[in-house]
Amino acid sequence: KIHSNILKHFIIFFPQVFQLLTDLKQQRKESGKNKQSSGQQNLNTIMYETLKYISKTPCRYQSPETVREFLAAMKGHKLTK
Image 1 (cartoon, one colour):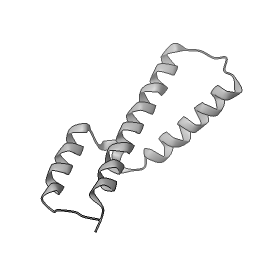
Image 2 (cartoon, one colour):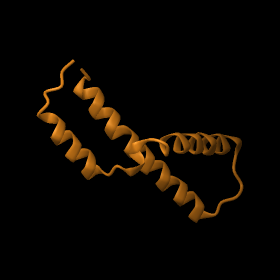
Image 3 (cartoon, one colour):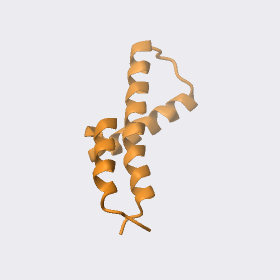
Image 4 (cartoon, helix red, strand yellow):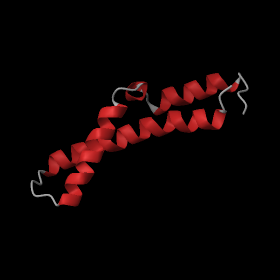
């Protein structure tokens, strides 16, 4: 059996990270800043690689509403440790 807290955090974590990184990427694109420090370039690489990985998971299509619906549906199954 899957521990329900692990399942809950995994499902919520990826969609939130995906949305946050997508928003940051859009903000950076709109700001149009071209000069970047090496630290900023490293951060951009991390953001790119993370978005690339998460984009291949189902969370790309999840919304807060679908996560709530899923968790409500799973509640009746009494998942335990």
